[in-house]
Length: 131
Image (cartoon, rainbow, N blue to C red):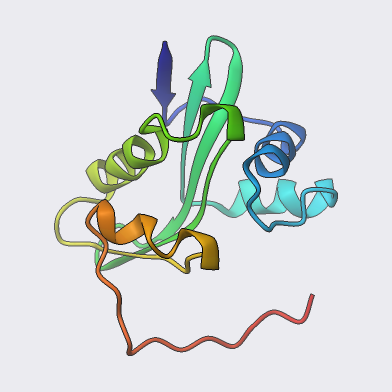
């Protein structure tokens, strides 16, 4: 049975394992960078199979107007069981109805997000990272 937590901390190594197994494009070999990503997150919700973390939603937010869902990753052995959808639902519970939830989608996930309530926007811009 999968359980969810907003209070359970995960290590950078555990986050690396989730990223690596999920297929998400993240610097999973850069443990120091992953630790900084964890330390600076405003909201971190995790999915667990007993004592094993199998999913994560990591967000940056002001808890008032907007929230950027910077990571949504689920171990590939646990995908297609509603874990990602539940992680997003728990993020929405935490931020409330007055806060817009924003994200950048991986190309292979573009069909997923509209199915769970996200709207495609055409008025966004990005300055991509250099590395």
